[in-house]
Length: 273
Ligand SMILES: NC(=O)c1ccc[n+]([C@@H]2O[C@H](COP(=O)([O-])OP(=O)(O)OC[C@H]3O[C@@H](n4cnc5c(N)ncnc54)[C@H](OP(=O)(O)O)[C@@H]3O)[C@@H](O)[C@H]2O)c1
Image 1 (cartoon, helix red, strand yellow):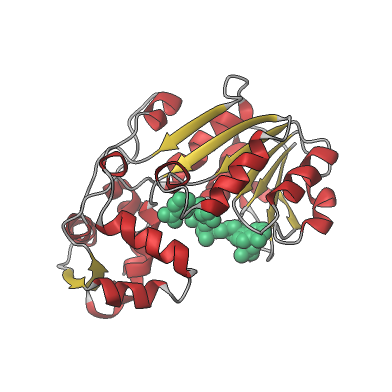
Image 2 (cartoon, protein in one colour):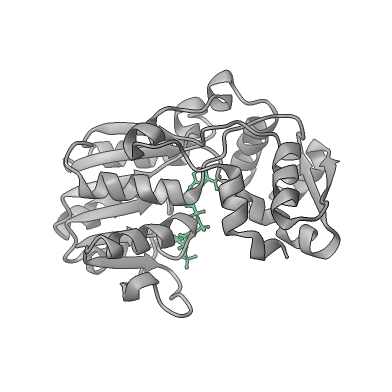
């Protein structure tokens, strides 16, 4: 059985769907039960990675677990999985754990706990997600406008469905223990270019308005703690050469090029209509 934490999120939901379609026995985990259940009728268990006391039951029966970076005690989360009998851990970390370890200390600590687990572990380090453009949906629906900072800085956003596919490969295969994979999209696009792609998909003009750094910080502060906010603005505004460059691991794992931002926009166009 495979236990998928974050099972109602952009990556987790797609991962549950893929694993069920591949014939795996899957349990999805999140703090809140999903409306309408999980894809493929997968079982759901409520669990909070920030409250590891109850996690042993959450992982019970699992051979492999897909973990998110959440909660303050990664060693306790890993212990709960190990004592429940889990033998393989796949962690969805972040590219920032490699490129900005001080700012991503939380993800680094999770990676260390997973590496020290004594289990077969694999770390996935994604760059920014294409689905971060959901933040634009309200402005596009209301006024056909996107306000975002750093309009001319290009980054290779990754499609969550590709992350789910990569996670499924790693969870189901034996060749990935002890590996760290950096997962990005295959093309670096600026926010201005992404807005143009979205407009093409919608078949209507969408206006791009460049936010100042301070305006973007104010907006992001609503759902990000200060160190993560600073690091996020750092990546969006002044990425390193490495962060700007598409990484090869996703194409190697999937045996095909990564999905594009246009693919993501087409699959999620209804959110912008
Ligand atoms: N967005 C990016 O650009 C980016 C880049 C690099 C890495 N990441 C990492 O990727 C992860 C997954 O992204 P996503 O877009 O799939 O996330 P998402 O759509 O926001 O979904 C998060 C999922 O995790 C669950 N969750 C959150 N906190 C939890 C906790 N304490 N215990 C158990 N479940 C919890 C949520 O359900 P409940 O709220 O019901 O618990 C939900 O199922 C992020 O958490 C982040 O660490 C994201």
